[in-house]
Length: 441
Image (cartoon, rainbow, N blue to C red; front, side):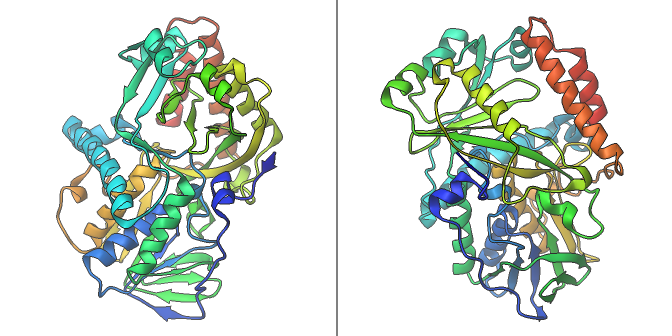
């Protein structure tokens, strides 16, 4: 089994060679820090709206190196954050508008991929969420019986389920590399292998020179903590994924996963999975949730015990796959604000803006955020700029060692809550309720 190497997705398509490095000081109209999907979509839509704009993206590694090329491939309408948080800002109607915008964004990404020739294994297949205990069943409130779940996918111990059609399976590396191609074709530049060390009004200071621009947008998601002055803004939360060797037709017959729907569960320490286009199962979940000092991974490598934990989850869902070979394991970081809710913001007075903090639900949200940043930068008053995450502010995370101790304690509580519920507790564990309140979820 391979461990690291950025991700299985990138190993499948081949790691790109970084190019167009910043060569000394330069100027442009809009400087975007971060070559993931948030930054790329923003560049794409800005150039589409105004082809005269000189838009440049600064990326420390290569476009799609971070979560955009490592995620589980869920193009879903899942809310990127807490409905309660957004409701306090804009009421229930505001939350409904954000949900509707995310559902429309699934259509937007699928349409762009089709129109622009991005071959990313996109299948509008929906997502099946499964409850495997009475407590999970109550939380989920799903419309599917245990038999109806089994008719779709034979998940061991399933007691109920919910199916959401507004979700598509994608190949993350193929999608992000396709969007990067579009950005370049539209005349924006992506300065790879160009690490930003500081941003300030009117400038991005990098290891290769200073890029000056009246508009500077921070789109770093889980890597935000590596930027000077931003260590406590968003927590870089770790998530890990394993992918199996291709399953045989006989193995698929036993699993019963005949379609391409995505699969998740309602546990507190939840898992997420997809059936890949080449007949594997890719399954992810939490490993070590957080590294001291907001450190990030090295080339996607994850811990051996995390791999074994995910293997255990796989065989718990599908006992018939006990002993199946794992081909690859990797991890990545996602951005988590202190209140677990994403934000998009731009200040015309300073020219500084940002988007992110998607708490693991960013594949769709990146596109919506990119279009919102476009409207904010261009001074447009639109439905997007009035969504409840626009201008959302949140306090910073606690300093170390409180940050490390708190996050690890929280996930210890969530795992304990799952154990109690799996043992037969007929309601959501109070341990998880307390953990949610402490976390600000």
